[in-house]
Length: 202
Image (cartoon, rainbow, N blue to C red; front, side, top):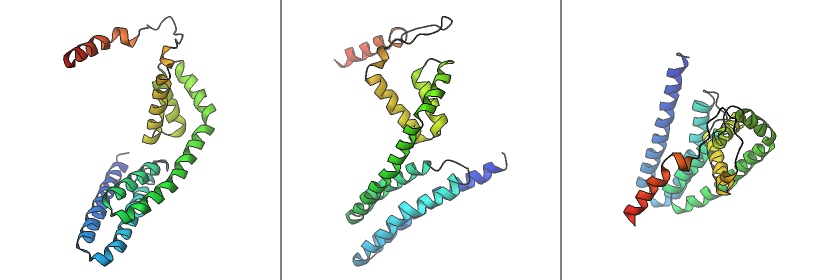
């Protein structure tokens, strides 16, 4: 474990350095390039952002640390966002086209998640026997099956908010007698706190 940490940190530093070099060099080249050649150079800059950097991230971070490849979806999305913000208008059209293609990958991940619903429910029921909090159990269940990555955490948070937004918080869940029951709005003091805040601003 102690041997792999320096290598891991070295790869992280290399990835950050590569990202900074791509952005800085690309911006300088576009700034000093003649106007007739600027469009071609901007297209090359786009390729560096959305192809070269994600490929380097895969080999330096994902593969070296044996992480799940689905993390690349977030990296590619972030690269497309950066490219859209800093590149000239003509290249933004290419960014949007690439983004539409990446949506297919996200839909594929969603279909995969739906195919694992039975397994997620099974893990959730096991979690529920130890702890009664829905959001915690659901996030843990989703992470155990789909991976504990940021996109999965975001998906879990959205589903939890949707569940409570539809009024499921009103549904009473039976709790064993040895566990203390309470309502958060009664015992947390949120009502008094927000009442004071509203009184100050009103």
